[in-house]
Length: 106
Image 1: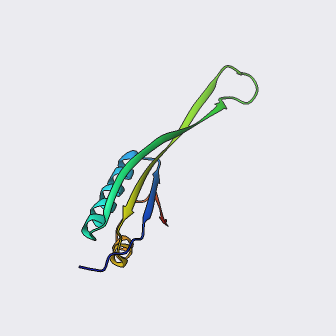
Image 2 (image 1 turned 30 degrees about the horizontal axis):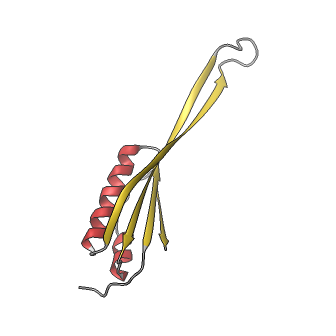
Image 3 (image 1 turned 90 degrees about the vertical axis):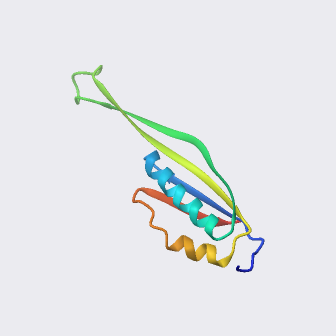
């Protein structure tokens, strides 16, 4: 068993598709537990919805409009008692395209 440090890490995961996000979170939690780190989370944060309204035609039909929306899903995972092996294992994970991961040391 590797030497444990008192280092804390916060992992922020963002994506437009919640299914891809959940898949990435499962992989990250599995790897963290394999490296004997204490996992808190995943904590779901509120989904940010951005709505855009566009006119269908240029001049004539002011009442004819289309609405589009983008949903941004976000999760946070906190890790305590991490080892140097933990970061090495995170670099080997295959995370799906369209998922953004940020790792911060606290």
